[in-house]
Length: 424
Image 1 (spheres, rainbow, N blue to C red):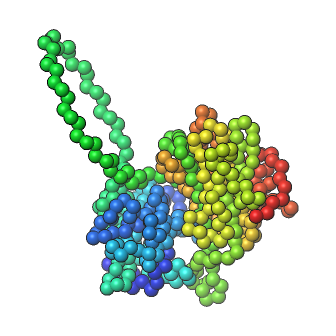
Image 2 (cartoon, one colour; image 1 turned 180 degrees about the horizontal axis):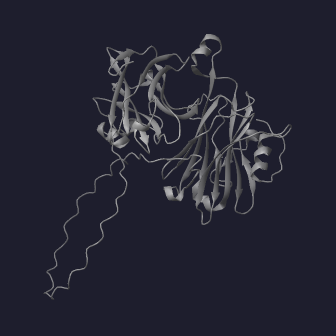
């Protein structure tokens, strides 16, 4: 559809894909959404993006990236039925990390029916030069119904400038303080001053809400590691999230159209963690055998549940207690297929590690081309003094006949544990 045009939205449950062609030197791009009342956000909570991935109403959720067929897609799930009455517009934006949109080929936004993958609208953004953020489209109310408009408005001030335009308070990077001036020459002695009672201090106003933090770290093959300490993640918790979906091609005429659609089956993926403590104790945290771990006692790692279909909005989650990081020697986060598939082919996943304090860390898994049922996701290593380093693994492993996925990943990383069969 051309820039400035609009179209009715046929359903309320929608999938918004912001896509681009991948390739060497192409900057990373991120999708985001702003929920507006009177042209502005009501608060910073109305901004949905990689650091704040879900709106409290459930109307918008940032699902994450996937790469397939030479394209990278960042997805927002939108449920217009859950948009609060005071919200008139949902802005759909993209930002560029490490370059400009003039370096991003084939940028587009697609709006799909979340139930069956039918494309309701598509806008191809062309002619970009120095822009680092774009409002690609928007949902807006008109006479009680929702419409989509192709916008195509660029910003050279990045996501920060775009967000600020709509009323978001952005956490600016700290500036280097000005060095103190040279000390002045000593003054001649004077008579001591008359003591005056200090004025009564005015009441201290309540602190304003914390500004939105736009920084993040994306791990890649070229840059696979990051120190949690250098990102400010030295205490509190580390939340590890695996969000996944199944993508299949239709057969027949639908297959010729090349349209992938989300499907749900009996697939059951399990997020797990091998751990080794500094006192030598080793073990596994997983749903199998109800070994969900513990957050405030060894192993200081807890699995919050078992998403057996991929339908749980938050995916599967592990939490690591960073207040006890000095007791952790290493932690390997991995995922296994418990049932429902023979490999990770057609499964697309995003891994996000969110320290309670500090910038989030994320990465996507490459497309699986081997018959793998276990994938090592991230290795967290204590490098000394309690400093933890996260390394992207994204390594698909193929178990030998009769060998479990857990034993396979154990052998690959030299954990040396004894394994017995377990059940959920």
